Length: 90
Length: 165
Image 1 (cartoon, rainbow over the protein chains, first blue to last red):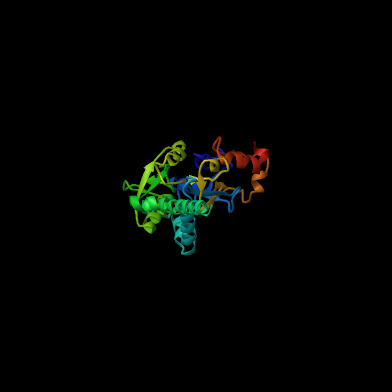
Image 2 (cartoon, each protein chain N blue to C red; image 1 turned 90 degrees about the vertical axis):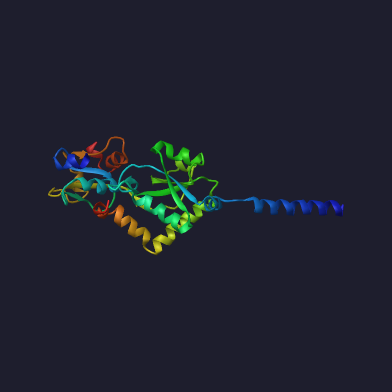
């Protein structure tokens, strides 16, 4: 909807969450929109557990560290979030 | 006196031993159950959605599958509306809440967040051939900005481009 408003000239520019913008670009012609480099804000995303599961949250933290170091986390995010590569398979 | 001290010591040692034997963490429960239960939302790409083949997938979903594989258990996804995610976790219907959720201080009063697995944020976008090239260009008077009302993007736009509001 926001991208549509910008492409149709109803707005000069749009502001929205980066993952939402990248995800919605799949519905428009390639390269029809230019995203400025950098973000206005930086917001973390995380998983959650109950406070009575300290062992599990520690394991998840180690999982994120391990997959960061071996490249699996970056591969996941580059495929799903930072690009539209997933579109051809899903 | 010595006998009562000895009795007290024995009781204390037994209490510690029983406590350590009786303690079963969530990881033990998951291993014994053979299932990692995930509370998630089917909100659409890229984090969690049903693809054209009818399969649940997305960034968070695939990370959870990877977690279960590392644990050596099956993964079970339980679908909830956004408002139902935290209650489901607290009611022990799920072990992990895996959504594109921001760990705010308010939410952390109820649930324990992991370390962040990624950072997101608001971005500015323009039509491909727009004369706007930088954030400074967007601060010029007379420009219209598109935002979703009530979203973080609206708040960020108001902060970054106060003259637009």
